[in-house]
Length: 127
Image (cartoon, rainbow, N blue to C red; front, side, top):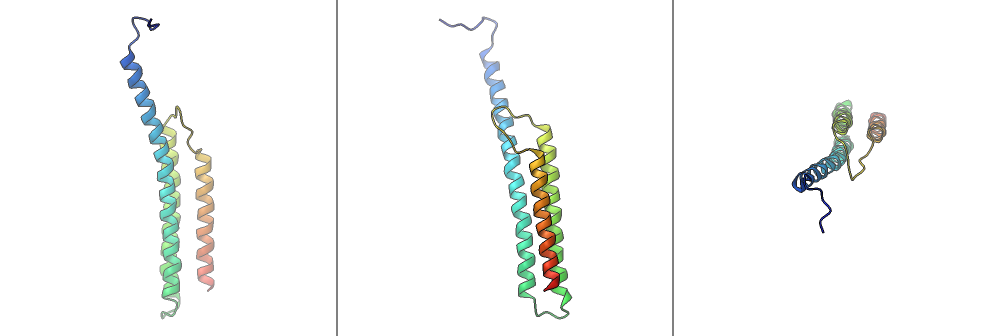
């Protein structure tokens, strides 16, 4: 026999569950988007290294370093934007059945990647 009270609306429960699942999917998508932005920043660093290597013999010698520095700066901007946007999205969402990355982890990763980008830029200028 059905134990559900007569005033209980099963369709409302289903709708609320679907909404909770959608919010969980959005939180997980935020994590994946952050990872995608971090990969894009790393690609900008790889382009900087590649440009510096390919145009090493260019004249004047500071020109390839300057162009590589533009891509290093772009990677820093990408890392900052990824952190800021993921933090804002994470603040607006409430997870139900999943666990998203903490905003602190987003910050730590963005700082570590940014420090790596600055180090690569410094090394490129010393070569």
